[in-house]
Image 1 (cartoon, rainbow, N blue to C red):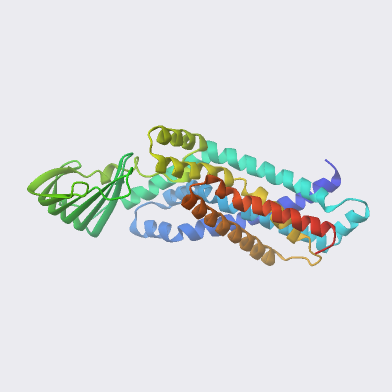
Image 2: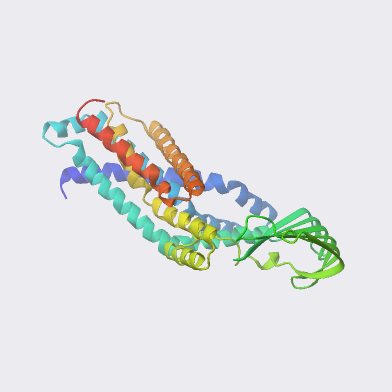
Length: 360
């Protein structure tokens, strides 16, 4: 490795790690501050458990922290070289800006690949443990819960459970409504209303003054009492899993299973998650094409302005990704998810060409 290459990469890595520390602290702490303070005040978790939670949840935000840090690293390092006329000096010796771009691009590619394998082999497990802690705290119902609600899911149906009051210690609910929706259809299949519900054993409840309505047959049945299984207290392992607590191989198997079982809506939703698992870890590569030309300025950019530019470009990129998700879901075409990346490469290529030709 030449001295010039080491100098370029050292400048980039210094800015990258500085940005990683700053943005990791800002994004993780601000997004979790309310929750961890609430846990500490209510005594749900100890200080050690809260710190453990913050460490475990941090890989969930690396999809945002790493690309923003890459942008900050490029802006900080290239603008420094440019404002000190070091790039001009390189050009005078026949070294064009593509020489710098290729070396930074290879490092960004290496960072993206390392992060991808970390996320798919270890990161998703840490996130899963953190989310287990989070959902466990939500399920610790105590005293009397007003306007209680819960969503229970399995492969075939979703159950929405509502109660005007839930007296946890007494095992008693008032004005209970259960709405059942099968995932193969878009409409509600059945609703159950009861004046009272009393827990008999484990999750088996006895419902009193019950009205059952079947929407498919449009029939209504009134009974004095029925037994019903409420499983909301043992659903932590069956809750809907976040994209970041599954790896890409699990998602692929799940998508194939849904497709074979003719759950086409769930299969498409899983394929969307599968593509996002590839897009986010490598988004720094696509942002490199877009940000590099903007960094070739003759005015040195301060760290503050570098942070602003990194945040601005990244927000614009992620807004574009969100828009692409909406278009992909509406159209049913997964390839639309990759549109922001293609646009970033195209615009970046055009800008670099114009910079080399001194048109901009």
